[in-house]
Structure formats: structure tokens, C-alpha cells
Image (cartoon, rainbow, N blue to C red; front, side, top):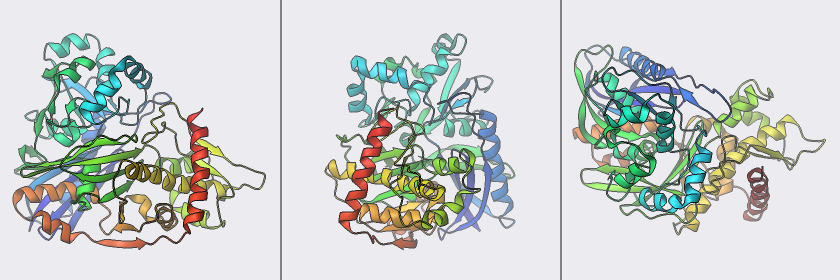
Length: 491
């Protein structure tokens, strides 16, 4: 049997899956990744843990394959803006990786934007000058590393997002690279030229010598060694996680939209081969760069969604497991006027209020834990509507459907409420590992195993939720939600 190995290195876990020539998953392995919270607003990961959990997931996947299985190529999707620095010679990391949710540089970014850099950065990158993206994290790491700037300028230090770190280690230090979709999340890539930008490097005072080589999304990037596999394996699929999910959903035509519900929820719309800047607080990002075509996307990220439901377990103790949330929410006829805005790490698109905080409003003596749980789930759906509404305000056509993936798609209450809030059907992917699937499909595409038409035809829906709510009721509820968002943004 021939397979491609697809690795989805995510925020809280890494999953490796083997995909056969029929585009079906034939084996999988998973390992959990620990987050570190040194102080409020800070999120870190240990570089050794990033590597170890990935190797463990690969080993578990390979162990589940029949003896003699051949791996044609590997594909890797990564968690995006999380970044770290290491020594070029020894490979030793200089401290922990700074996670994409980390807000330690929020004030610095706000000051830089206030000095006039914000519009220039947005025009060049399609992104906003926000601590979410990698560049300010790199600046912080250099500033807090002894002789960091001097060592970087001397070529002694290199930087990378988690894909770069993994490829460096899995290749024995031979590969120092990333793909252009991941690079488009750093604030250092010119979106139109799709190359590192000297003006942006100067703005953040990051030496070019630190940067990884830019590799294709689909094509031979180099070779890596997999634990438990005798031969070296070519890496032929590389993409940042949300774009990999867009590809895995076969959203290959302009106007198609997907939402991935995980720790956060990320909504992407394919806008075709021409980048158009958003006037509504959305990100314009590179969707993929293939040998014969390039696609861009509008994106809106909601930083805290699944994490907010987990907080009901760990923080409030009103549930014992997130899977209880659907039944608890359905045990009351409505939210009782309670709204929960999950702005635990600020409000991102389309609001961009880094100093916003989580908010629960509308409580009365009659409010119960059931109302709070329901409000948390509804808050996820409302935030997705915020993003889709901004896409429409940017002149995009309303999506015909929303393709969905991620753990929260098992929550039937949430998916139905999402369809009701958008007024369009929500289609849950039959393959729940959509991000890994996207990385694997890229590798198989580069191998010539299938075409884009094959990929589009192979997508399957496991459940479809039709809108049931009256439009008048939908708009009343959404207007009340927007009032709650204003309260969260004022804190």
C-alpha cells in the first residue's frame, strides 16, 4: 500500500494520518501538547515538547499501518503564528516558543501603529499590526535574549514558526524553510510579491539572515527522517493550518467559506487569485501558492471559542466535560437574556480590540448554569456571524453554505444555532481531520496521485443543518449580541 503521511501540528495536539491513493485515512496517531501560561496574557510552548509530541504522533500512526506500507511523501500543516529562535550551529532553542494567542506585545504593537506604521503594514501584508502575528514576538525574543540582536545580525541565530522548527529537527538541521502561506502570517511577507520584504524587516529590526527559505506549498521542499521508518521521505505539502483546512474542505472556488472550530474558530473565504484588502477589519491572506495557480482568502479569527467552553469546566466548574454543553444548553428554551462574549484573549476580527475582556451580561436571579452554558455556545456562533457579516460588507457574496470542521461540530446545538444565525446551511465535513487532510492532499497533488477536480469531487458532508429561525428573531438576537460586544470592548 502507498500512502502520504499528513501531519497536523496544532495548538494543543499533533495528529498524524496516513492517506491512501483513494484519499481515505487508513491510520492515525495523536499526541497532546502542553501550553504554558507564565502570566496573564502570555502563552508559551516548550520547543522540546513541540518536537516530541510530533514524533510520538508519527510513531503511533506508522505503527497502525500494515507492514511494508510505502510513504510516498509527507505533508505538514502548522499552528501558524507561534514562533521561536534557536542557535544555528547547535540547534538549541533560546527559550520557549511564544504562542499565537500571546498578548505580551499588544501595547508595543499599538504604539507602533499609532506612530503611523499600521496602514503601511496593512497595505503591504494584508494583516493588521497586532501581537497575534509573529514579527512582534520575534522582536520581543531578541530584546530578551542576551546579545540577541548582535548574535542575529552575525548570523548565529535563526527564527521559525513551528513548521520550520519541526523540519529543522526532522532533517537533522538540513532544512531551514517555511511555505508562503505560513510566511504570510508573520507581518514580514509582501502579500503581492509573495517574498520577504526588506522594509518590513527594517520596521521590526529583524535581520534577514534569520529568515527561513520560502518553499512551495505543493512540491519537493526537502527530505526528512521519520521515527520508525527506514527511508528518508520527501516533504511535498506545506501549509499553515487554517489554509490547509480550507484546502481540505475543497473550497477551491471563490466565494466558498469554511469555519474550523477548535481552541479558537477561524473563518476563511476563498476570494480568488487577486488579493483585495478588507475595509471591515478582516485579514487578507495567501490561501495557497501552487505551481499553476495562486489563491487568496479573507480571514476572520476568533481567538477563544472551544477554550471558552473548556473554561466552563476548568474555571467555573459548572460542567465536568465540554461534551455536556449541548444537553445543558438545550435544557432551557432560550438564553434567558444572558450573553457571553468570549474575549478572553481580546477581540480579533472584525473588531480588533486587544484590550477587550471576556464578558457575561444579562444575569438575573433567575439565571442558571444552563443559561451560561447556552450563552457560551451561542457566543461562538455570534462571533462567526460577526466575521461572515464583515465579509459581506466587504462586497463578497453571501456564502451558499458554511463548511465546518473541528471538535465542536459534534455539538448539534451549536451547529444548528450557527445555521440559524447565518441564515445559510452548515455542512459538517465527513472527515473531521480536515487540516491534516489538506496537508496530505497537497502532498498527493504534488505526487500526481490526484487533481484539483478529484479533490473537489471527493469532499463529503456528514451532517447538514438548515436554518430554522425566523429572520426577524435572528436579527433581534444579533442586535442584543452587538450590545454585549460593545460592553466587552469598553473594559
